[in-house]
Each structure stands twice: as structure tokens, then as C-alpha cells.
Length: 197
Image 1 (cartoon, helix red, strand yellow):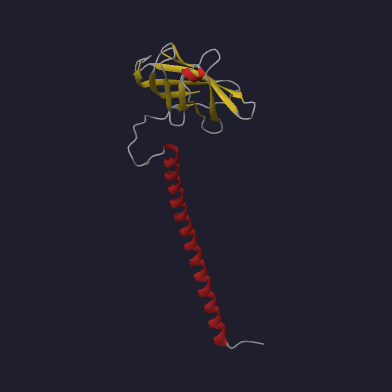
Image 2 (cartoon, rainbow, N blue to C red; image 1 turned 90 degrees about the horizontal axis):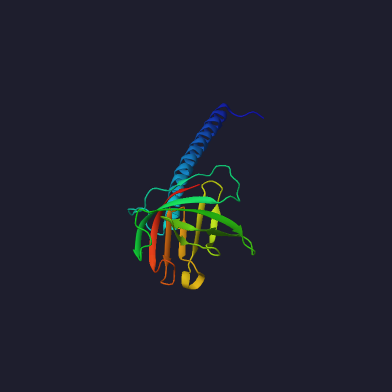
């Protein structure tokens, strides 16, 4: 059955109005989603900065530039070579500020799963961490994307025959400390990592 001519015009107008509103609503949703995504990603970046550094990301940093990290195709069993520069030393000061440290980091499978790392840290020709049966520490090594090595040995020479050590290539930091029973006496040392390859 046909419709009156006036009714058809009103229905067509209503359909066009509804279609226009629907298109406007879709455009608004797209813009709103984009803006919301921007703010979420921005806040996630700030939150991850807080988590990684443990401090306010807007506060001035005293850290230097990030170390140069090279991740070419390589044999995963080959050691990584770390170069660092001493920024501070106290106590017996086995090396001076500005001394260069160079050392390899090997990764060894742990019997319980995961890995242990081992290193012999030498600064200005002096062995400051490790030894013939020492130098092992718990570590996390990430090779996908940007190489990172993070680990520590919290025991000093009195407990495990070598110094305490913390290595964090993400933050570019190396720290060593030992007690009076160590080969170099009681000292603390901080160094900035220059490169990892």
C-alpha cells in the first residue's frame, strides 16, 4: 500500500538526520579515543619512569648519558664486554676517580633453572671483584631489543671471598664495596658504564 506524499518526505528527512547524527557520533568517538590513548600512553611512560628510577621523573637527574649498547647478531654463549669509568671512591680507594674498568660478563645456566652471571671486574689493572672461584652473581639478562644486564652480589669478602657488587646497564651504573678482610681493604666505589657489547 502506498504512503501519502508528505509522509515520504518526512521519513526521508528523519533518516538523513539520524544518519548525520550517527556520523557525527562516530567522529566524536574517534577523536575521543585518540585523545584518551595519548593521555594513557603518556601516563604509562611517567609511571614506568617512576618504577625504574624509584623517584620523580620531573626531578633533575644527576646521571650521565646512557651507555652505548650494541646488540649485533652474536653467539649467546659469548660473554658481553662492559666498559666503565670510576666516578667516586672512598675508604682505601684501590683506584682513583677517572680510572677505567673493563670486564666480561658470562652467563651460566643455574641447576634450578634460569641463569647466574660471572665476572672478573678489573679497574686500572686491579681485580676488584671476582677471583679464581668467585665472581658469580644473580642476574637478569635481556637480549631481545636493547641488551640489559642487571644483577648483584650483596656479600663482601668476609662472607664469600669477593667484594659486593651491583651492575645495572639499564641505568648505566656499577658499584663495588668491600670490608677490611678483602684484598684492597674497606672501600666503596661507583662507576658510570660507558659501553656494553
